[in-house]
Amino acid sequence: MKYITLMLLLCCTFHLQAQQVARFTVKAGAYPSANLPVSYVLDTLIDRESMELEEIKGKERIKTPFQIEPGKIWFILMGNTKPGETRVYELKKKVSPPKVIVDFMWGLDTAGVLTLSEMDKVRLQYHSTGVDTIYHRSGYIHPLLAPDGQVLTNIQPKDHLHHYGIWNPWTHTAFKGKEVDFWNLQKKEGRVEFAGFVSKTMGTVWGGFKALQRHIAGQEPAIDELLDVRVYFSGMDSSRYIMDYTSTLNCATTAGITLLQYRYGGGFGLRATADWKADNTTLITDAGTTRNNTDSTRARWVKITGNTGKGRSGMLILCAPDNFDAPQPLRVWNDKAEHGELMLNYSPTKMKEWKLYYGREYRQRYRVIVFDNDLSVAESEAAWQAFAHPPTVTGVLLRGQQ
Image 1 (cartoon, one colour):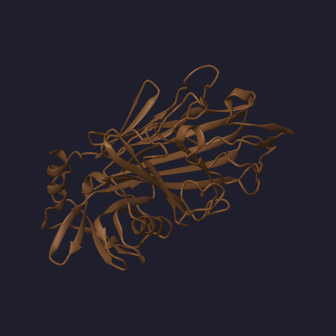
Image 2: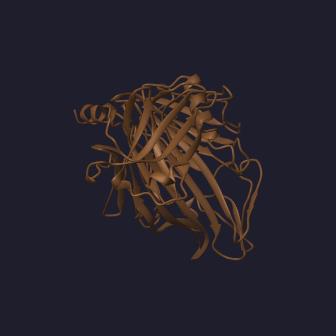
Image 3: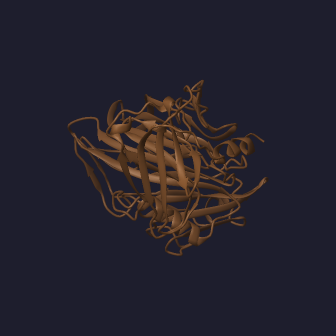
């Protein structure tokens, strides 16, 4: 009922007289999209509480949620956007006094667990504390939940106690003349630790966090990582939502580090729910490969769909075209491995090593569309295109009317 009321408020039209501050024109690409978040770089300070954004459709003016982060405005292209479609938005000052803004996307930090929710629906939890002494690590996501509440991840399964939901340690590295494994914790060579939150954000378009994660070799920091995770408002679609997962690496010492070529590690790692087995789960990539022939192939996107006690759901994982060695290779267990359970890893160094130098930043971007039921191949490809080649947003700041 909350969602019905919310969307009625968002979709009603307004004819208030107010000063226009800016106009944004969005030009879609060659593929359709649904409830897509977009942004535009601002060169002026905007007071969020005193502004409102409206989409102009003929004589209609449709109120649209928007959000400000330093130097940028975010909003959602609500509903479906057709290929090549142009949509126009106006930002204006409110006539009535500023009111308290209701954030749709929430972040609540309690006892070492940061929970990101959309209104009353939990989307994921991020852990800033470790699990136990031998396999201690922090800085991972579990659970990631489907829109209907199904848990899609697993941590510390008996066969691999070092697997942690969604996580990204490097396996085979060279640091100060020694080989260091940050993935296999039982070797006691390296680990990943949460080092603090840079920010936590709630809003009407997205909620998320930026966390500093430290990759420790023995007792010495080797890599500082800024993990930026955002979950976007799903709009009127209760069957899917979008999460962005961005990892930026920076060498912790002047020695740098080499991420050696190895079959798995780093990037985006997933240990899926134990409910997903060989007989109830399908996997497909943009190249048309499936679970038994995807390992060591490259993919722009990979889609996993499986059954749990609540029904069918899954996730579409998109790899950004500007990632290292993109389209990145995959490490995927076939349906005979580990009792049919699923582990997937976008492994940037599966084919070649990656040398990181002190004083530089190295970014990896992934988008995950979490869904109920299923997505078609056409929908999956359109989602990757919208991620890799987002709609063009142009803006005009009407300075004279501020």
